[in-house]
Image (cartoon, rainbow, N blue to C red; front, side, top):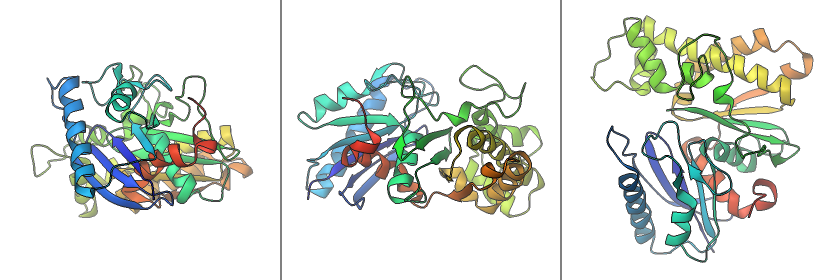
Length: 314
């Protein structure tokens, strides 16, 4: 059977997989994103090329159906000149053009990484069988994608669903977008780590991460626990706003920070209950992404396999 080469590009990791038409991941690999100060765009592109070459060589079977990619935004769409907020090395980087040159003759389709998570969950995950779904990523950044009426909503520029930049704390912390108090500024992993440090958290390593913060919260560290509650409440407020606007059925939350489980979901659901007061809004189900860490890759593949629902551009 033909396979799609699926790619997920984030501020922390690069991931790639070969995905079959039924959504099965048959080969998978990942590498850290070269994202240190001073890394340039070509160095990052070279790391991505090396990962893709290694994956295809190891599988022994090149992709023949196409290439689907989820990448942090914003980006021009569908041209996919990408400028991810959390990857400074790429500004207006011609990602689709580069991949078309590397894989001539194959369709190359690129969308926001959080949109691809939403697509994956709608196609084969927690949103399957529902027409109105919000899919979210809570990780190095916070993003989302919207399915309304059973189809992906792109918006005027392909950036619809950017829930990470809903304001949840007016006058709050500065965000990479230039605003203040965005959901991303409050709830993204590095932002939580910085906030916890300011409140007196003392991690066991110099390069503290959201994973270490979560582990300390599980061990009962009061500051780490407060950071999880802060993130969860911000998410609950943003999701309440989204469902009042869009009349959603399911919100599926993935990304690294979602692995915190009840530490994140309990305050999320509490805040959602406080702010979602309309009866139709309270019917929303908020669930972890069923596809886990492969949701974005499966969604990227669906840009090729299920283009009638998820791809409306050339």
